[in-house]
Image: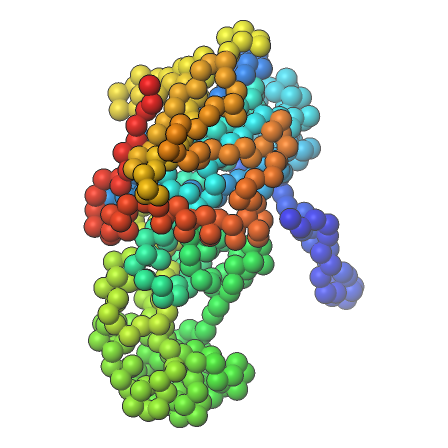
Amino acid sequence: MLTGPSWHAPVTVRGVRKVRCVSTTPPSSALLTDHYELTMLAAALADGTAHRRCAFEVFARGLPAGRRYGVVAGTGRLLEHLARFRFGPEEIAALERGRVVDTRTCEHLAGWRFGGDVWGYPEGEAFFPGSPILAVEGSFADCVLLETLALSVLNHDCAIAAAASRMVTAAGGRPLLEMGSRRTHEQAAVAAARAAYLVGFDATSNLQAARQYAVPSSGTSAHAYTLLHDDERAAFAGQLAALGEGTTLLVDTYDVDAAVRLGVELSGGRLGAVRIDSGHLPDEARRVRALLDSLGAPGTRIVVSGDLDEYSIAALADVPVDVYGVGTSLVTGSGAPTAGLVYKLVARQVQPGGPLLPVAKRSVGKAGHGGRAAGYRELSDGVATAELLQTLPPDLARDACAAPPGTRRLLRPLVRAGVAVEADPPTAGVLGLAAARVHHQQALAELPAAARDLSAGPPVLPTRLLP
């Protein structure tokens, strides 16, 4: 996490030479929330219920239509936000100006720090309906403030990760480049690049993701560079001179075959790759491969892009394509831009020091299970057979429950009494992202083979509530 000022080059304003100082201290994340959370806090402070211990859980009532599994992503980002979830003078002043809450609530928030406990599934883990992928326990005043932040991070990142995971499966081991920054919000682009890399993408075009999360970056050129020059020869010669023979030339600005011939000629047959971004990609790729081989450039790779999704990637399985570039479909979740997660109160204390008693609403179509839940993956000979949910006794600490025989525990401690704990695998930073990539491959490998089908179907594992 960056701290302190960043000194930029001197500038001259009205004849006066000045040095600009731009703060790189990450801003507070406290106002990345909904007004109603502070409304509830204000009311609970007024009626004396704010300090009741509560348990909230994040889960999906179902998966997006046709999806066989969900993927946990964003937990590391959520912990980064939680570390700077503070109501400083600027945030308090904004609440006062907007008359969002009363003086009592502002005074409470001015000295507030999250002091609760958090558990979560590891990033990269598969999840199914009802899975409590995040559990938060603490006072109502602590827990209620995290709802919007938790859901905005996890709903976005889990959706992107699930779509990207399907694309990785469809690619069958061929490299995938994330290149959707121009099709989404600038901060969502960074999060999407992280989520895609987490599940197996190889690189991103987004430089902030490369800087912040050490995701490998990659980029070639756009048609604008070719159109800038008098002809394609001048454009290719300039790119090769600047970036070397290993560069990737975009060959579909004018005539694909002529561009391929020109690229091979100018590189002496040592061109790194060509990119095709339009046309009927299967036919184009086959023709370009044959042409490259005939020109003595068998080592030149073919990169394809242009509105790819998991289905079009799968359709290219028997086509001589070396790398896929995916943009719009990835950053929009390939039709499912949210994971459909909710953040619900499942238990509360009635008396100070008393047990956490189950609570649940009974709304039609939105009924809850009530009570804190622990999640387990049931396995048989190394293959997952079910998602098991166990309702915990009201007086049992979450960490004290034993995993049933033949299962793998899913929830792991992330925060204790407001302090982040070391997790295995790690959950934050570059190390956490590397561990999540490994964990996702392990989690996906233990699912039944049907999980890797792209055809629509129900969740590949049933969710069962243990008695």
